Length: 459
Image 1 (cartoon, rainbow, N blue to C red):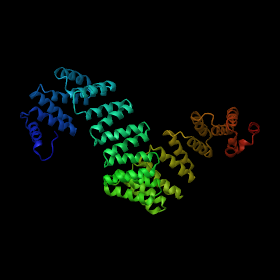
Image 2 (cartoon, rainbow, N blue to C red; image 1 turned 135 degrees about the vertical axis):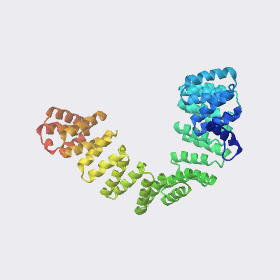
Image 3 (cartoon, rainbow, N blue to C red; image 1 turned 45 degrees about the vertical axis):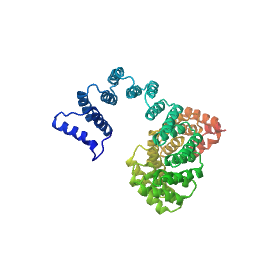
Image 4 (tube, helix red, strand yellow; image 1 turned 180 degrees about the vertical axis):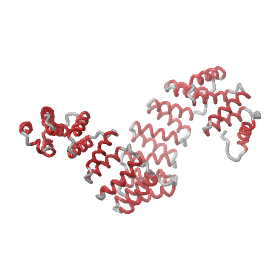
């Protein structure tokens, strides 16, 4: 039993807390202690739960339920040896108590022995008529083992017992999605809706499955039914907006996103999507207003900063684009996309040193795309830093071996610094791998292209 506010059920709790303050020991029956402990555990007040367990066992030393709470605390504190030992004692006292099996399974699970946990939970199924929680626990253990087919079966069993168990429904769909079984998920959800036609969660999930298959009209119908089932369901309006965007019905999409904002706290996702829709409608003033609202609502949302930066980028206002991407970097200096945009914008503004710094930072953060290496290296060539450019391209060639674009650049650079053997080696390799990129020598290294040895190799 959970204690409520302003009802008689909280009297034992009030009495217990009063006892703690006065140090006068009062008597509680074992069930009252169980309710008090359960309340504290639900509230996350572990220290008070432990006090209640100790006092409870002082007054009721033979209570199996109170000792099971002690097991629960042991497991929470990772004292698995102590939990195991106490469970073995309790098993000798009451081998038919399902909670002992559940806690034993919990210990196995904490030890990553999920197969054994499943076996123990299946034994517990034989001891109870209340099977839903056990089906759910078994399903979760199968998820830990990445055995999604088995997990799916047990979550479906939960729904067979309780059609309103939405947590189980979400888990079933999660399994379908992981197994890439969209068609099977659609079949299951339609059958489920035959039995529970006003389940907004099922309609919502059905819409997501149709959306993943690009069947936008059926997705739209599913979200319509979700909203009919619950016209305050924010998720359905958001998903419906996404579908309408795909159908290029931008004004209708805006309407759905706006409804979601009226039903709930401001959502940076909805604000961003409204901005994108207005941009598609060429209403740039409103687009910008919503992009501004997005980054003010959630400064950590990278998509907001990226949208506002790209907005100015497309309009050719590179100074403002740079202003906003600098603000974004000040908030999150480890975001690869921010640094790549920073590099590209600075390059357009002919701030080549800053642009090179941006590409360098992008690489340091793990972006190893070929174009990033090429852009940075070409900037280093332009800045008159051939050795730094060589180092950049030699790093790149480890990720992209036998890549002619890199090999021609390395050839040109080595010829530039008069290391003719290395220049010859890379030029021959580049020519062998792809002759079409030979123009790189003439374009980036015009003086090198006139040298006799280079002309001879390229012929």
